[in-house]
Length: 384
Image 1 (cartoon, one colour):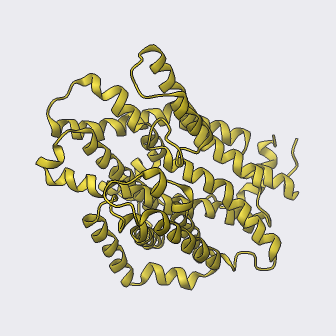
Image 2 (cartoon, rainbow, N blue to C red; image 1 turned 90 degrees about the vertical axis):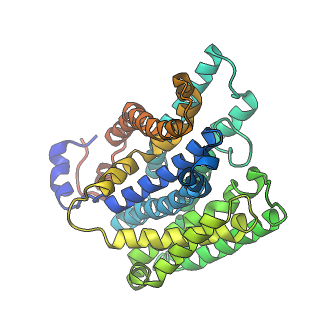
Image 3 (cartoon, rainbow, N blue to C red; image 1 turned 30 degrees about the horizontal axis):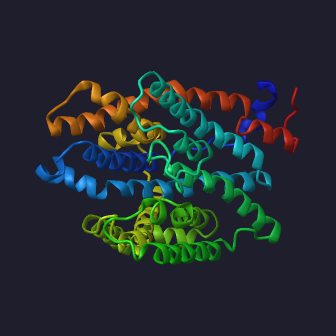
């Protein structure tokens, strides 16, 4: 490891990346949407007695689509920054740092669930479901927790995107990313065609593992986030248009209207509906990136942003809380149970983040720092 004395002068020339609190707030909204849906599903007949809970159940699943666009934007931003700063993408470092972000909390969840089932049998954890979870193929095969299908989609994206960018760099080093809009277009058309081919005949009662969850049907949402990040860094006029175009609010409104009226079980939603949702989410992300104010956010925006910081652990652990913790409270009143599900899952996820995810990230940053190694390789500092 390099000494702090050697690193300090070089580090002063590199401005630290400032966290966009608007994007954190969008993460907070996305996790609330997911919690709202699963809280409604966890409570018998509550959707029949309360319009609000029915609405959150109807739209909440689309929080994952918002997460996809956000992830595509943020992850590609890391890789673009790597290339712009050092002239290459550090593939090994990227994979290691992503692994420390995802794996410690994820595999702890699997281990704790198996341990509890060994002591108190009765849940649905099975060896057949364990293999897809351990290998991140639970978007194609039924796993253990159900919700982790989206982690599999993102994991496949984390693996493939750096390889795609490296291919583009090698193919045209003088202007490597200029073809990304065409790449996105091909992926978007491919995914949409696959959704129609597989899902158009499935209406009402559907098989999620064939027409909703698989990576090849959903990765276009992540790639749209990549496209937005490309525009921001390499085509600022296009990005400014996305951020300022008033018609973008019409697109966002159309996505919300479709989401509010068409259930995910409808073939309309799991074919072209997914496309409209990620496009609407993309315009929302572009506006959030462009219009972050210079002053600290307060009130509900601050609360949402803080939730967004812990959104991974909240998402990861909330079904564990619903299945393993909440039943011990024996809450009978539906609306009390609904809010106890949401509030308790948030608290449980934050505690899990502080106990598992954040220590793992601190260890990662000590062992595999984001800057020091590149500085050493570039010759800016000496490593003792």
